[in-house]
Every structure is written in structure tokens, then in C-alpha cells.
Figure 1: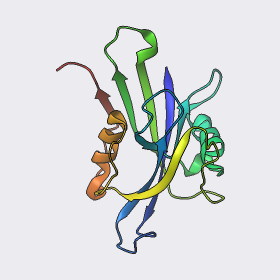
Figure 2: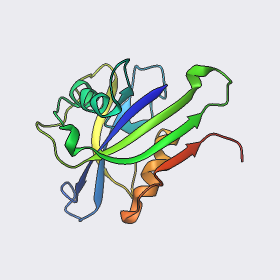
Figure 3: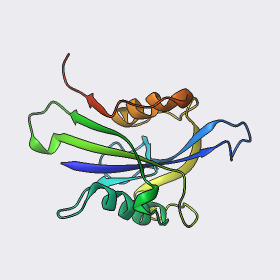
Length: 155
């Protein structure tokens, strides 16, 4: 099951520290990882929809902002499993970063998030959804995650 993730990024705007920051939301009322911090916008790719289109749609739905597909920069594809043997728990996640958008990000689905904030990559809140933390950790210090990552597989 594919999903698209949008990591909004900015350089040092909030704290004035020059730190690289990412917008995260605190999940609430979703039934999955509630109480965990997660990408500002993310969700399943719908039938007949590209991962790019899904990322743009999720940004509108969850953050109330508009993103052009050309402003999405591919970061990584994460193939992950929860190890249950169920198809629903076998995932492919497309991670994009974005530094340009229209509108002011806000909690457009307040029933699915408790909070929204900017965080320095070297001072992330806890807890962060584990598979998303793997990508965020790779971005620290100006790093780049591998184009293809895996998560949850043995070995």
C-alpha cells in the first residue's frame, strides 16, 4: 500500500538559530500512532493517483496549503513492514521535502492532530513515528537519506 509524505522544511525561521527545521504534527484521533509526532502531511495514495498528486492533496487536506508538484523534491522511498504477514502492513512510502508553498500551514483536520509545530532536525520532539524518524535522522546536519530505504525487515 503506497503512501506519500510531505516534509515542509525551512532554514532557521522560528528560533533564529539558523537550524534546519521541519514541520511536524502530533497525531490524535487517527487510530494509528496517536500521541506520536509525524510528517506535517501524509496519507495513502488513492487509486488512479500518482504519489506526487497524493502529496499535494494531503498538503491541502491536512495543512490547508497548496503545493505545486514541481516544488516537491523526492527524498527517499521507504519499503517497510510491520512483520504481521498481512498485506495491509506491507508499505511503500514516498517521502518528499518542500520549501515553497502557498498559504499558512495550520491544522486543517483538527480531529486528526493535536498540535503542529516547527522543530530543528537535531532537536525533534518525542516520540516520532519510528519509520519517519529514520528518514528525519538521515536529514540531520544537511545529510540526505538513501534513495531507497527499508524498515522493519530482519537482518
